[in-house]
Length: 171
Image (cartoon, rainbow, N blue to C red):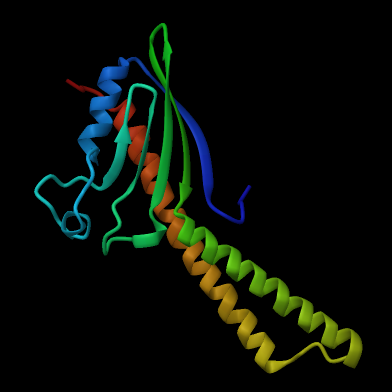
């Protein structure tokens, strides 16, 4: 089922210890605060696409706010749960608050425009209003574009986490 705002919860069970899981996340994410200059570099010497914090209890990382995606990048909240065979990683992924606010703004705009069109139809008998239909199309297009970008970046982050914890030959 497709939600109005992209969000996903999933679990990954791995046979690694919590220390190995922390080091795996540290390989793809900066775990120390970045300066403004470091934050906006397109390519850096380490090639890390995420930033945030990692601890034995869990992690909170997000895509780096660069020219590669900005407000559409995913935030990953994870919790490490020790199991007899290794560790289970429970992850909740969502998008940045700016993108959520924009999607909510677009949804409110769609509701207002559709209700205005319906009101005009009930009162005048004429459903078609050129300006409102163009506005509805533009707002729906903006919503679709932002949702599509956010959904794509979320899919990339989810598959990165799955690949990270399930790849073979980790030393």
